[in-house]
Length: 560
Image (cartoon, rainbow, N blue to C red; front, side, top):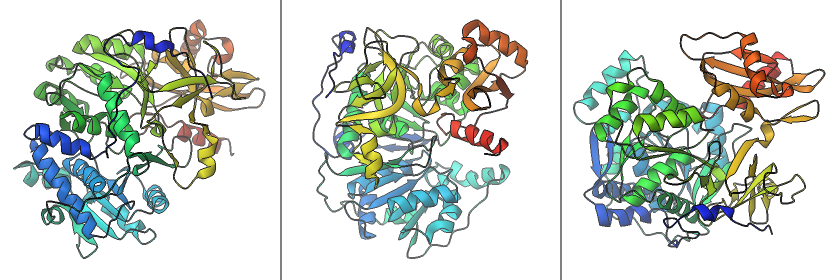
């Protein structure tokens, strides 16, 4: 329907290909094949507890057989509500082997959020952490759950950490959950131990059968289940591997701190590691000291992350105590990567840090800057192999180079659609082209840029204002640590600009100083009219600012 000149291919060089050969296999075959090649390689290291690929594969098979014994059949949904731990990887691949569709679930969900996801997905089984079991128990009666499988962080800790863990919980005032197991509530460790080593084979059609229902982050509305097939995910993982071509199978150490329940961490960390035989150094949550220690101790070579993670690392006062020179490459996602963060991180580590772009609906990655090649500051980079991108007007017409419009993507990693939402699916597709809802443009060299979310655009006195442009200016101020910009109601302009500012520790700024600073770099109509200083901004676990929360707060203040 739309013609793409593919200007970006001129930058691919000899290492990258326009199109790749993808095998038509289910996602869990990654684990089968890697185990055959690298069975003795450490697949995961969880706070000192190590599992080889041989051990990982055996556990995943036992998990699959046990799910089948619970009545899980092809196409049934299995929810996984876990932090980054061995159980998360075992459950994910075990569920896929059983023919199930995985429903990744955020352990921080409150009852309302969890009830919506379980009800909407019609999940049959959930595998969850013991600390979130009370939330599961409260909503269980109103869902289709038939079985709950409960595990704890300590289940896979090495001795003596497993014995000390309850003491640490008490010290940190974390609740210790007392569980009563029965015929429908199971202890993960005991349940897994009783599994058969060979589950029943399930016939999977990779192009049609779903591997995942991945719910959107809900930053702009009620989460929807994104239907991703086995092929969507295998393709995107292979595209990622192709993009980081200087890595060596079976010989890289990946920092796995991005949560697996987010599609970015799931594909670019877990699935990529399993495809390539990398070792995952698992961290259940982001803590800057733990990250610094892990990079130094384990000689991390790959560190996919989000901008707030990189900013926290380079600004930590103890950073110089650690050797970070092992890092080869990092692809940053989930939010815009500020230039100063990128440059400082590369200077500190000697590795490469580039910005990528994607959405849950694209499995998730669609574009990225070249890690070992030309890149442009502020750009989200170039489309990946077999991926096409165009810019469209509101009328659906293809725009020329440099013109701002909606970014549309076509490629084998694009979702099948939204779960049980045919009308919403139809609204985001024009033929095979997925409408991202992001506003951007392409330059003459084929590099793409995101101006802002279409829904976040502020219209003041008839003029379009893009929050990201203002945020980039504010990020450059030496005293500012974090920032978010939204539109608020204005009696005369319709909307006006409000900026939420988080200052660096020990810094001070007045509204007048900020106003003078912004007027140096922004047209007057873009300069924020209102500032609010905060200690932190509401964010998802991977660092994406929840503008929706800020907007809702402003509406409540205005009595709307």
